[in-house]
Length: 449
Image (tube, rainbow, N blue to C red; front, top):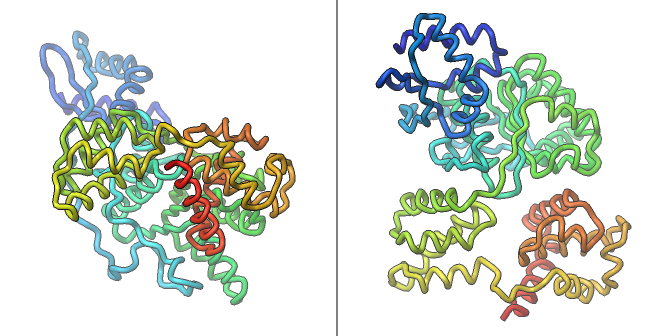
């Protein structure tokens, strides 16, 4: 019967677009034949549901044409582990992705995170489609979308999937030229090339010496007109040569401030996926998976307690487990409910959390501004700088939605998200902003006591 299924797949292949067949039909495996029913395995629940809704009748019809007229079809999620491919070893263990070229700093030579692989990614309803799409992107040559854009807030797994795709491609073909770079480093490398009269080398590197481009954080291209033009030409060149491209962003291109319509169109011309916050069951699975990796023992009751309180993102879940492990080892005590609640108090706002108004009052007092000036339409730095910090702190210390925060300052939710991402990014490199945020953070935490 497996041979019959392969014949059916070949017939369907000739009738569907290459990208559609690659994404939905190709991954289906023949599992068994019981009680007059053919059991077919799909890679995950989302794929199974999509096939049932869209291709069940087509598959049944093809089987009938081959003489199998009295059969039922059962689609299951195939839980069997795929045989692991041998680990990829580059000739230079310090450099996985970028070629040996002159760059302005070592930060332009980024590597793939060895922990970000498909087998470590926990799949749930909020990320099933992104997981399926990136997996197909990596494992099949019959990919006809040209690009994959993954949209998600910080800490929800878009970078994990991007790296996982890079690892999978390199495992299958170690000679693949996989370039992984952030939008900021792409900008810096381009500026450096211009200053050093090496812009042609820069163009050739990304247009002719690249098989797969993994470009992270494209929302930081905001306002960079020259870089947007150059990137647009690069994407056209890669698309014409049928090269693979993955983008990640916290914002849809149409919502990125000062993003050209031409580049926005190019970024969304392929497959676009969105990753949401993990639901309770997925958070439980993530915690269970990580406790095993971190070699710690936690009761089901504590895992459920953590999953019910930690709703922001995956990083928050991992941080809680690391804190629990550290406290348990340093204090030489077992991980119990009391220790878990102590950690939760450090990571989650208490029931008496402060309000956006409290934070706005604090910002206004610190920067000597009237609150209504934070709500003004002015983009002057004297107003925009404290406004961005207000957004960042409000997202961090309150449970207000993006829409609610946007209402407090007469902005859109996409502007709020962009501003929060901007501050989170800048405090890593801007000492002044980091000091301001640390000072205000301490004030807020004092207010909560």
